[in-house]
Image 1 (cartoon, rainbow, N blue to C red):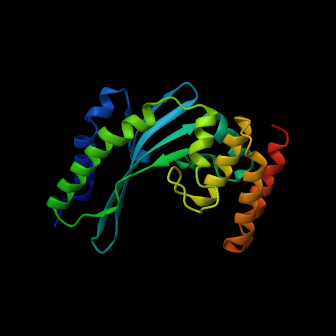
Image 2 (cartoon, rainbow, N blue to C red):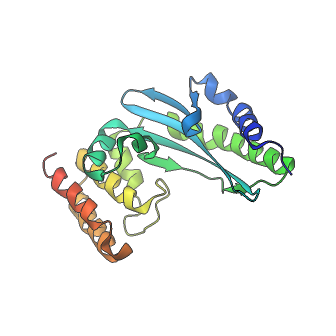
Image 3 (cartoon, one colour):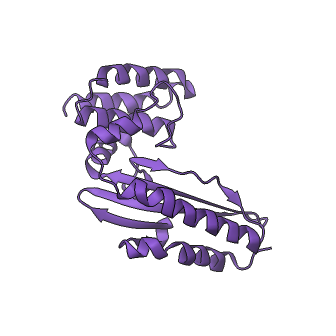
Length: 206
């Protein structure tokens, strides 16, 4: 069994934060994330701590970059409440599966995996500069697939990918538009299609 859940979360943050604090990241408790803002971008290492009412607990970690210009266009038509927008990152990435933690040994293992991820993957990924073409290359790396390595949400990935393609004058823009339109028509009963169509109309004015 693990001890007090709040104390356990605090321990994970404390033992995983040293390298990030040295790079001027600050921990934002309300989002369980180490964050740093600079030059129109916000970079973060994010944690998710989940506890159930029957005593089960899970932990996960990923990294993300938010580009102000891309997200500003996205949220003009997203319909997402302003206070919820900070959790919608432009790109995100993880190599660590969500872990169930039932003991202090499990917590120790998660901390070890998280620290390795931070040092070997997250910091190199989020600390590099990103141009619009770079965002487009990542987000549109597998346009025919619902899964994208650099964005966990298939619907939002299509929006962000098309915005990045537009801003970078990506020659694939029209092909991407057709591919993503077909994706929205074919999935979830077309429930997300109206939001995507609002984005398309907005991008005509960009």
